[in-house]
Image 1 (cartoon, one colour):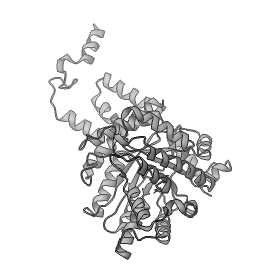
Image 2 (cartoon, helix red, strand yellow):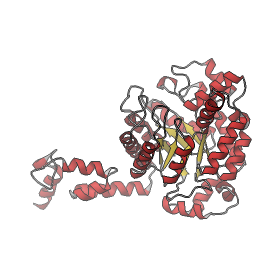
Image 3 (tube, one colour):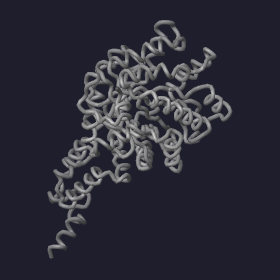
Image 4 (cartoon, helix red, strand yellow):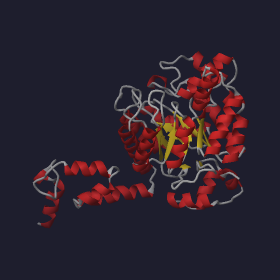
Length: 427
């Protein structure tokens, strides 16, 4: 049985107990959330990991880091190094988005070294194989799709991004309401191009039940992809995006009925004043399913700093009820990210998730801030550094300056407000 099927029968599994302890909630409550489709535990029956997690309502906001080869940068060793960096700095999950080199080997290595859940976008490998087999990445068929899904599930992939919402109906909505940026999702663009080339319905939509069979067999969580997410704030919350969201909501109900855990992916580029609205719409149309958001990026002008634009949006989204944040690195829109880009992306996203958890009144988050505030007041530099979200950077900054008084920092020196008030209290 899948975790969802077990929850449907009021069975608390060992995995539920294990994750509930880590999360600080009762196993019974976690089971209830899974049964209602408001939480998921993305973990393939063939994948053994040290740090499984739950994503959803009433739980801490999770952070995902994307890694993977590209057609220009295909060294698997580089991606494993990025994986290790992502894990070191606190990613709760990773996605292997490889499209260059030996995809099966890259995924095998990521699954081997990852201590957290691993996700993929299967249509990438479907397209890469089609190019090799048929000299055209659009010449794949249903057999090719199911072959990749089954192989990846057998390998141990924990969650699939499936672009089933890009269909004739949602593309018609897009055609009737032109965008500034059109389709910016790589998976969404592949599907739309396939549909035009073959003049057929999206096979990930038309044969969704066969996808569910594979997901059910291996307890793979489906992350229903936002192929029509806005790539510009000018396109945010438009007709096409909402049309796709409604389709994903209907598919989520079908997945749950088949015993398959499901979450929904979301935008994208969204201005500040529309972030909360987007969360509310997803919860409404997708029946409370966990929401997995990319950013959202709150402006389009942050090239080189999009880990910041996405952290701003991510904090608001998390506070409004988003459950899972996908990081964005400083390299977004510009190049294939480096290990250092991954580090900055993970840290920025974790700050956003933590800020959201404070709004959600997560006890663990509040205690963390309380403890570091106490250390700061006591000018306990070692403890303050250890409690920071990136102790390595905090320590490096502290060591890079030489205050005249060891008990203060070089920003305020002898005029340190904390020290002044401490001396004042003594007097």
